[in-house]
Length: 477
View 1 (tube, helix red, strand yellow):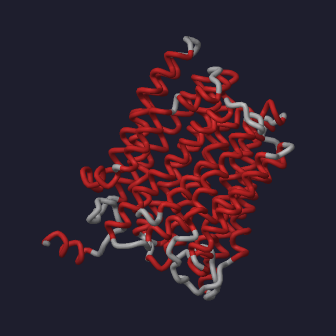
View 2 (spheres, helix red, strand yellow):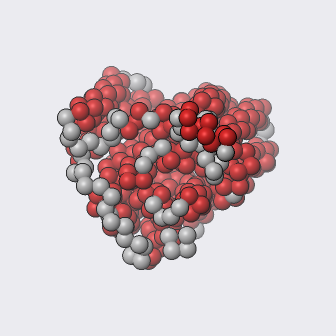
View 3 (spheres, helix red, strand yellow):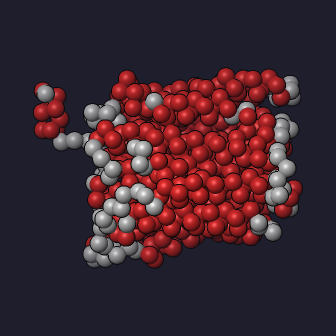
C-alpha cells in the first residue's frame, strides 16, 4: 500500500479535474459570454472524452504496461490543465476540457488495474477502499479547493487559477510513478482503436444535443444531435458484436457484458453518477448564483459532506463487514431519505434567507456523504470482481466509462432541467424538483442492488452469482 501511493494520488487528480469544472461553472458565463447550455457543455465535454477513452486506455494498459500508460497520462494531464487555464475563449476551453478528459482516461483505468493486481484479497480490499476514498475526495475537493483558490489573488485570475491547480496532483503522482512495480503486459490482442472514435463521437453528439437543447429552444439541430448520438451508440454495439464473432479485436466484448453482476453493476453506476453529477452542478449554481455565496463560501459549505464521504470511504471494509451484502441497499435508502429532506428544506426556505438553507445542508450533508460513499465503495468491488484479473484494465475502463458517461448525462438532463426551471420556480424550488427526480434514480439503484445481492465475498463485497452447487458447498462450510 505504501509503495502504491502514486496510484491513489493519480486517482484523486483525475476526479479532482472533473470537479473543478463544477465550482468554476457559475463564473464561465460572465467571463466568456457563455449561455447555461454552453457552460453545461464545458463540463460535459470533459466527462464525454473521459468516458470515450477509458476502455481503450484500459486495453492499452493491459497490452503495453500499466505503469507506462499511467506516466504518459499524468504528463498529458499536466499539459492539458495548463492549456485549459490559458483558454482565450469558450470553444478553446471546450477543446481543452476534451483533451483533459482524454488524459484522465489514460490515467484512471491503470490505477484500478494496478490495485486489482497488487496482491491477495485483503490487499485488494484495502486498495479498493483507498481508491474509493481518494477518487471520492478528489470529486469533492475540487469544489472546496477550487472555491478557495478562486478567492485568492493569483497570477491567473479567478477560475483560471482554480483550473490550473488540477495539474498539481499529477505532478505529485509523477514523483513516485517511476518507482511503481512494472507489471508485464497482461494481453496480446491489438486494441480496437477505431472503436474509441465510434463510441466517443456519438456520445459527444448526444451530450451536446442534451446540453444545448434547453437554451436553444430544442431546435431541430439539437434533436438531430441527440438522435444521431443514440443511433451511433447503437451502431457501435452492433459493430462490436460483429467483430467479436469474426474474431477481430474489439473495444468492449459483448460476451463480457453478459455476466449478470457486471451488467447490473454498470447500470447501477449509471444511476448513481448521473445523480451525483447533476447534484454537484446544481449545488454550485444554486449556492453561487441563486444564494449569492462566493466560491470560497460555496466550497466551505461542502465540508461536512466531504468529510463524511472521506471517513466512510476509508472505513468501507469495516462497513461492508458489518452490513454485508445489504450495504448498498441500506445506503440507497439513506440517500433517498436525505434527498427528500433536503428537497423539502429547499422548497419551504425559498426566499427566507441563505443561513437557514446552509445550516440544514450542513446537517443533512453528513447523511448524504456517508450514504453516497457506502454506495460507491461496494459497487467498485462488484464490477472488478466480475471480471478476470487478466483484463483488469478492461474492468476499470468499463466502470469508469459508465461513471463518466453518467456524470455527463446527469449534468445535461437533470442539470439542464434545473437551469430551465430556476427562472420560473426560483433557485431553491427548482433544486427541490431536481432532487425529487434524483430520488427516483436512487430508488432504481436500490432495486438493482437488491437484485444483485446473491452471495457476499469474504470481504463483504457483493459478487457475481455463483453456481448452486458451489453455493451449497459454501453454505455447509
